[in-house]
Image (tube, rainbow, N blue to C red; front, side, top):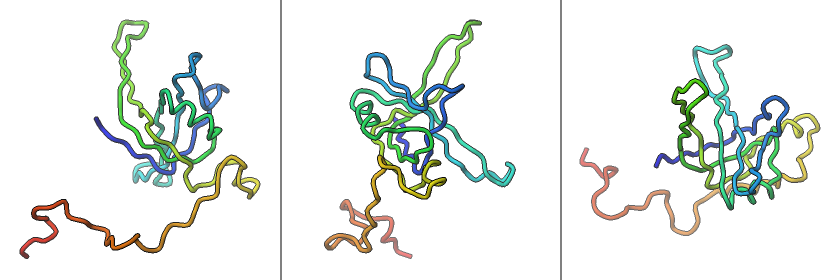
Length: 154
């Protein structure tokens, strides 16, 4: 399995005026696309969009519905990479990668609506401030036992 973590991606507009988030007739699957701007020195303004297909099954459908996910919202997704394989009308084998969402949450960015009105959308909760120090005695690194490559003899 290839684990995937996507942070600060924006839910993309639906294709040809379709809804941005689609739910199957059975209610057991949901799919949508997200986009993320990345650095690319060969692109105009050194930035380009990477667009990814996202699918969710069973409990993820309820989660997406409760979040009232829509175009322009910024989200974080944890999931795994998978591949669809099918035969097109000409008999050629086609392939497409997608992310199977295992967890999803709101990100700290502004949605398109929020950018225009300067007010937070009602369905996107306020983010709690990050802690300034680690809880308890945690120092940021704990050994799993044995020797550590951090403790080399340099």
